[in-house]
Length: 183
Ligand SMILES: C[S@@+](CC[C@H](N)C(=O)[O-])C[C@H]1O[C@@H](n2cnc3c(N)ncnc32)[C@H](O)[C@@H]1O
Image 1: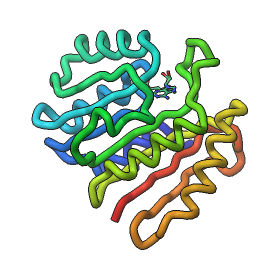
Image 2: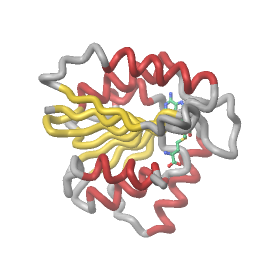
Image 3: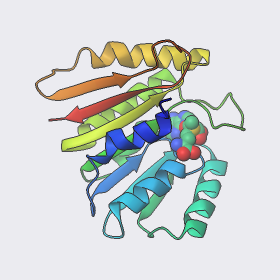
């Protein structure tokens, strides 16, 4: 059976540059931040965003104990404000939408800020770069976020940006992914 988490990493890997700049737009417990930190290496940089202080403290602890390079900047602010903090182009950006498993389900990503953040990420993305966006349609806001992004991505010029979608067709409430690639 397909393991979506493994596929997610495979999809985005070809866009990662050693020494490049990456962004984790939904830090959570820091698993994606750690992976990005290891991928870009000590000459690279990772910017990670979350609106919950617990996400920052969990991520900081994870990064310290895992011994990954000190190439990260953890930011307590909405990903919608990413351009206030990132003043350079990114090769890769990751979004893992929804709420943090095991925490307050009311603190979830929301359509308005998700759209602003995705548009900011597209502006920050270098030519040849990629965004990976995981959507969780198992809850109502997740379903609506997925539809909103689907509608938005259909409007983008395919000569400039390619958007692919990976989903389990016979499991419509399972997470699915958008891979956004800038040509
Ligand atoms: C599914 S979790 C991310 C899991 C994370 N990638 C990991 O590896 O543990 C979604 C996270 O998005 C965060 N979030 C919600 N709204 C946000 C916003 N406007 N800006 C940044 N992060 C936000 C939540 O606090 C939550 O920690």
